[in-house]
Image 1 (cartoon, helix red, strand yellow):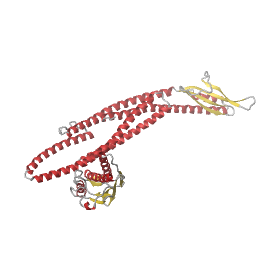
Image 2: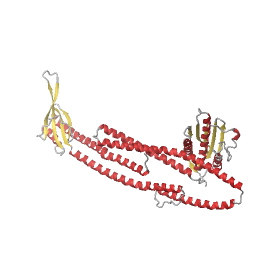
Image 3: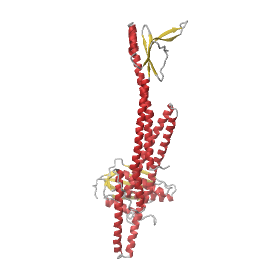
Length: 524
């Protein structure tokens, strides 16, 4: 099941609100109630201990009025239900070989109460005993306090929890409407406008500009429309001029230029096709994870609600805690894979932009890893039977290199694509062959080095000197233009001041080593 952006926003907000409501309506009141009861029981026990100590001291001093005074210590407490002094006597049988302890209520307040020495706590009464022992008398003080105050506090906590949950629910609804309005609606508008622009309609500017990142995207979209319109006008004007000029040229020269332009466009389209196929595969994985974990979270929430409808037991509480932990883990995975998809889209946009010619510090490891996966999945999209072992040896503390990321990315994409092609050709002739592509990065003095090694068909010695020349290719007619390595050489050597070295043995391996300066200043 696929969900649109608005649905995902609502599902996320509803999940958070439900989790918080469960906490405020069930878990928090229960914990607070337990805490209140424990504190109350401790207070009653301390009072019983205090009275027992006073009774013990009074009996030791044979001050029986002191016994009465000690028992009257808590008479003024409005929560008191009763206070009793229980006497413990040892009763022997006739043969005096066995005995039992007999407990008798010796003194009680109120006096009219007739209490059993074995009375215990219940929902409305807290009973605590404090033993004492003297040479004259042994027994215990038994206190009984009502729980009206505790119940009133629990009721107040529940009312507060209901109010807080209501406020959170209202806030969640308002937040959902706000997010849907400020994220989903503008994104859908941009999608529809971009679709019409792709069909050739350049009158699709966004009129209402927001004041956030969406607004920046809308401004960039409008600028893109203006640039496209201006470019189209410029191209039309230049085409008119070129048409007038080209009339004086020979048919042979026209055909040569046309062929040259077509070959360059073919190389660019081939590179774009490899990139697009890889991106489609890469972005599908995190989207599948997001969709799957969203569905599982919904099912877990439904299971929690079903368990809450039943009479609660200790097992149900443990199950609910386990389900909540699963939902939390799912939400973390949804966030992780959402960020992964966002990174892939940003990389795609960066690759698709025209090169600005401005060098900037960039992470070589990240760039190599991204284009390695895109090249591999691009080939896999065309040939499902192809598999290869990908090995990466990236230096952890590698400094950033000054580069134009889009251009260097195209170089790496071309090298990876050629390597996969060479291993694929070798695999076709040897069914037991396992393709391996190894990418290594390391720091060398004043530069960063990228090594691409494959175990494919290799390059014959006779053509090593020609491999970087324009239009030279070892691929069959129709499968290559011969411009990939030539353009790569121009980007690395002429634009970046780096080097490309080739080491290969026919039938065994090919190694391409690229160096990029890491201390070069940015220039336009």
